[in-house]
Length: 143
Image 1: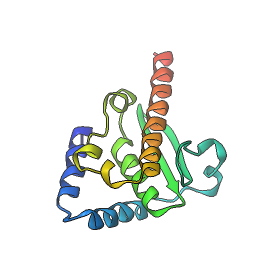
Image 2: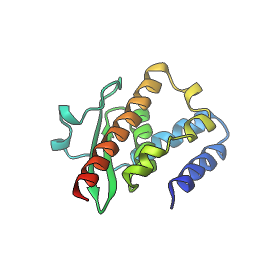
Image 3: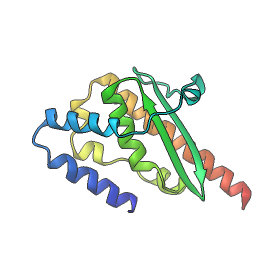
């Protein structure tokens, strides 16, 4: 599935839900499906700065694709990071850098998140793009 198809699928899934109460439940369920990080990954250097809740983000490069793993100590925040992991994981660094999560605006998520959660979500996206940029540089040095 291309990243555009992932984006379109997320928009369709949210539009199928009747109201924001249902959408919050969906976000929480998405977080519950995220495989928890092992304790050895829940360390200071993996914390996403700018999140009110604790969010740990790890990554690896597998055959040119960035694989993200994440966890959080808060249900909605874990759901938000799960959405982003599902969106960006498995993509090449260039694709991550070139693609913004437009679904956030299109489903009206920003209007329904508290300012601190909105800032946290922006911090997650920024951190994922920083990892992608680092992997892009690493791949360029290997070429």
